Length: 234
Image 1 (cartoon, rainbow, N blue to C red):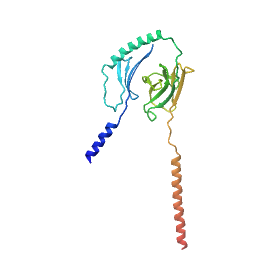
Image 2: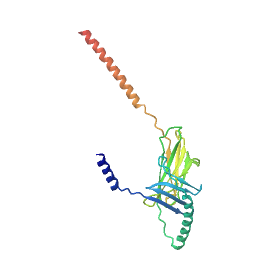
Image 3: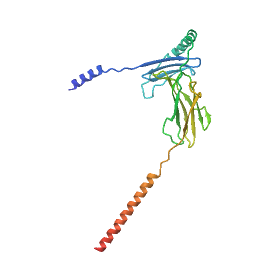
Image 4: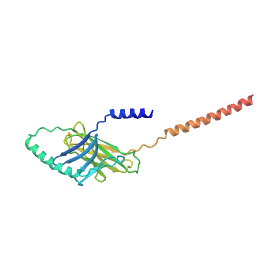
């Protein structure tokens, strides 16, 4: 029986085909430089040309993986990209640029607890072309500390997503906003707001249980009273 099961397992494993997709994205403009490695739609690594280093973005629970020499490769690719960009601009006639306006949403990374540090995420999606600028405010005051911006993530339709995050400590009544600036937007920007609103447990269930318990006790007392009267009559 063990031999038969082992043979069936081998047959299944040889007939199963899994298709994976490796991605290498290289892009540049007058102000932006992007070089990233992905796998099945997830980013594994990208080059941070500001800090001059490669950044591994594999989840913590995944097996460790290295990308030796990839940052140096990215620097070389950026030089090639700039040369190709300059040549294309010179050779090809300018055409009307296709624009896709972004949308945005704001949500907290974890459950909101007053006084406990959390992270707000501004998810910008569907934009084309990069770049896009994102800014934060707290109670109408501009916030620049504890703010980060992810790399652009290309979607299958050719548009891009990007995330901006803000570390904050929730306090009742605080209002945060994320403003996204992009040339495809009619007003050049959109703003999404998020308010600290921690729900307080309602008193309704407690009152209901208390009233029900009281009525139950009254019912028991009334039943005992009439039972005693009935015994006296007998």
